[in-house]
Image (cartoon, rainbow, N blue to C red; front, side, top):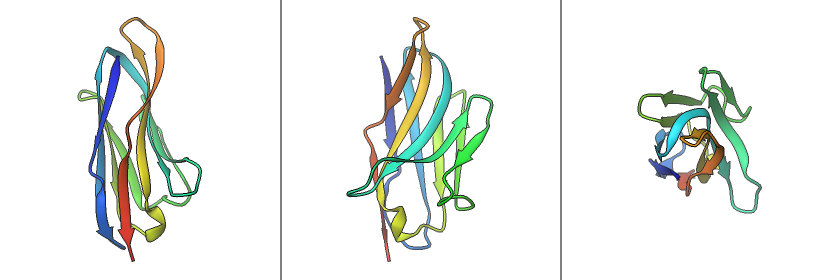
Length: 120
């Protein structure tokens, strides 16, 4: 079993900042991929940012220059620093990882989601 615990969501005014964290635990051998996705009301879930085991990052065009994804390999955590937040960033943010567990099986795991609300 692999579990994800997310933290850091909340209410912030436009222009403000928030930092999301996601900690993975359980039967983890290695983590290949970590990322953040979001789903706004009435919309499909979309990619926000991802980071590979090698440290390569990818961002949605809408967040480039404002959001920064990082990972702590030793702690199995991934963070999303969100600056210059806009009302359109309001959504439930989900952590997503792809791991190899101790049985050497590949697993895709989603967090429970954390709500980010940006007021205008």
